[in-house]
Image (cartoon, rainbow, N blue to C red):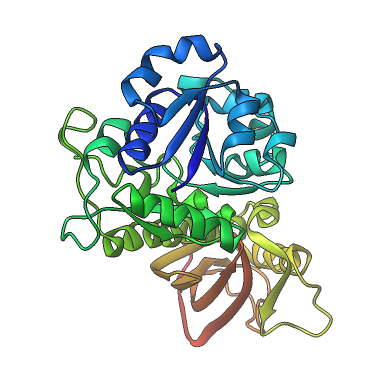
Length: 354
């Protein structure tokens, strides 16, 4: 069995400690108020539990669970955790827990904050998607039809293996969502983060079992939703907000087909947007359909406006025109990496100016 250290012993920490003791693990509990404040909890947990300081819990634990308000992350003893597997349960909820300047300034994503503090540790995100009362009751034996899956994410394979074994011993399956950065797919507000909540009763209702298959669907729905919004923002840029390109296109974005000498990235797209708006009065983009699967977004739409200057070889006609477009966008690491486009010149529609 494993010795588990706890930095923070509130609702999630205390619940995990109870599950761990029941599964035969030893636990070392700590908080910022000192060991004496944990006397009642330790007594309730029995001989497998003891109280300590955060440094002592970090040193004693083979796996260490961090479950404190995220704003207090600097209090976590980095030196004592060097080389260890650390479970990060933290969620960023400024309304409840206060703001963190490093996150608000967009310098550090919330999901990477603890790992950047614990540079010598192997951080695995886990237990951040389940309400403590549901965590206490949803555990089931291996193979049970209603056994629930919990998402994990981390950059170290051995650390994820250790956390997976711990989660299994507590009565859950672990679903590997990928590298630590992918924990954004089960951050607050995502479908996966709310997976165990009954939408009618929310926190007051019993937790709902969530199968690995269901969890996978919820995690993918975040991907496709975010990627769809990324492409929608691209068309806002084409419609008249070109500076948005810097937010959605990768620095080495490829436009396929491109004109000879066209630069990569946003610099290669901005002249096309300028040409579109020079050619068309009231230029706009119409989106008819968007179809998204993880990593790829397809669009059927039109470029529209009153043609007042030559565009794609078509002379000005002072009529309202629509050019049908079909485009495919490949998404990598949260940015559009490649775009394939086809303008249907044979389907160019023209009518009197509006």
